[in-house]
Amino acid sequence: MCSKPARRKQAGLSMVELVMFIVIVGIAVVGVLQVLGMGARSSPDPMRRKQALAIAESMMEEVRLAHFTFCDGSDPKAEDPATLSEADCTIPEGMGPELAAGNVRPFDNVNDYGGIYTTDAAGNSFPTGYSAVVTVVQDSTFGAAGAVVPQAAALRITVVVTYGADNVTLDGYRARYAPRSL
Image (tube, rainbow, N blue to C red):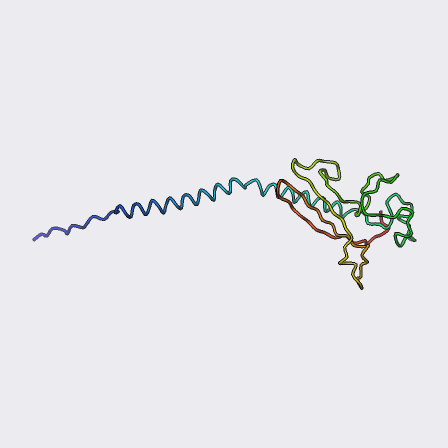
């Protein structure tokens, strides 16, 4: 005898299961779209930050590579081996840019830098919206009692590049290792 195969009960989705599926998928889609939207809104920021960092690094390099002598660059005693301190100079090197006669450029020494800049050393303008603030101060950390480096021979350089509401800050140091080298 031939028996009829047993009928299986049809399996499907109930209305409750379908509604739960739609709600869960809807929440997931909203979350993914929010993440994509946030990424699209902030995608130019890494480029702007890299540009600001490049400006800050170039300003820091320019300042750190400048001379750090006892005397002003226009002083005839600037490279004299007998010049052992600022007291031996006709024109001692002071903090801030000098506009003395004979200076081709007011930034002839590390400690001449300080202020707000919108151009690089060659006079090229920074991209629109960028500016750099350079601060050069004597650093007391190196000039503490018993220190190998006297306070007047160590400078702390801070470069802050601002772009929009954000900024990039770099700190560096410069020691007077060749005081009569122009």
